[in-house]
Image 1 (cartoon, helix red, strand yellow):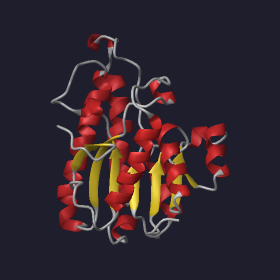
Image 2: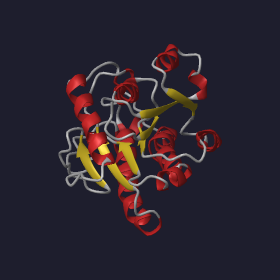
Image 3: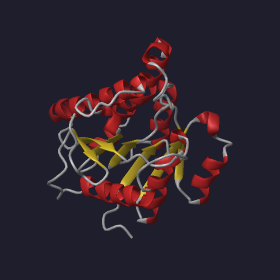
Length: 240
């Protein structure tokens, strides 16, 4: 069982990295809530969450009303860690920049940036009830300007903006909720449905380290994870 009884909310928990995190953190003894989009309520992946006895909420990043409803259903209880894991990604590395549209970019921003902004906003009162409230935004190495190798412009740009959101929240929350810290995390390029089940990093290594990172960041003793920072799954700092 977990040494500290954290309450953790994972946005986008019925597939891929979100499901792995929800399952592993639940096994550690934490109270885990996982969200899924209303459109997928009959999907086998949602039944997978329920079979593990993980508490569920319906929430869609592009529908603020659904975020407000989820926060109301969550109630006024304490929230220790909010993990914004849901995102949109297309296998567009070979799609020319000139063939990507304004609608493509807007869609990526709505899901990858606006959604995490809104969940942080609407669950902030819950995070403020925690001794050490934490917001973890699942970013990507594609977000790095310093390490940009081109390709998939919409995803790169939106994840870069997510990093800026993470840093901005860290600074601004210092004035209104100094107990709430933020972190952007590259989870590794692992094989999930979103990546077409392709990936160069080992799922077990990345997820095991990512669980330890969540535990470390949630504690009051961590001294290596910077508030508003950008790190890999193993805690190694990355270049913006």
